[in-house]
View 1 (cartoon, rainbow, N blue to C red):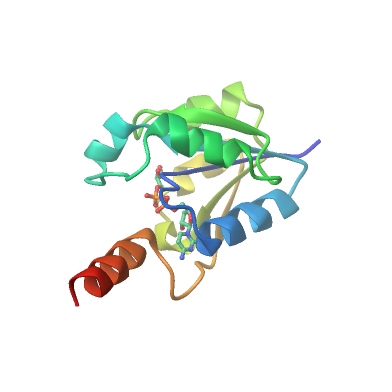
View 2 (view 1 turned 90 degrees about the vertical axis):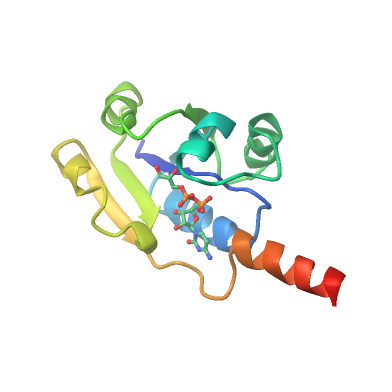
Length: 132
Ligand code: C2G
């Protein structure tokens, strides 16, 4: 049973997120998602449209996701890897290199981002359409 771990905000869920979650799950058998809390999003200078509880509800409905845990700070990843017996840590390659310290505890894989979509783009496009 190969256990996978990834993190994110996953706001305004889109196909880039789904592509990431699908490919992460394909690397093993059990996918855990560390979902950024609303408070941690503020630390990341992000403000999610959906609350943590609603983003969690949505993620738990995705066939690739087996467990959702709260991501409360930058420093919990080593403990999360240990506590959840994680074999592979996965992130999109916009984070390439940033989490290599986890290589002492598990395999680290950075997957190519899906080009052309982001939560920021969705917000921008909707704002532009709405305001002409
Ligand atoms: N992603 C992707 N392609 C996109 C958009 C996002 O592959 N077009 C990936 C990101 O690389 C990330 C995941 O989807 O691996 C979640 O993206 P975000 O919700 O934007 O996550 P982020 O804010 O980068 O949080 O501690 C790590 C942070 O919590 C990561």
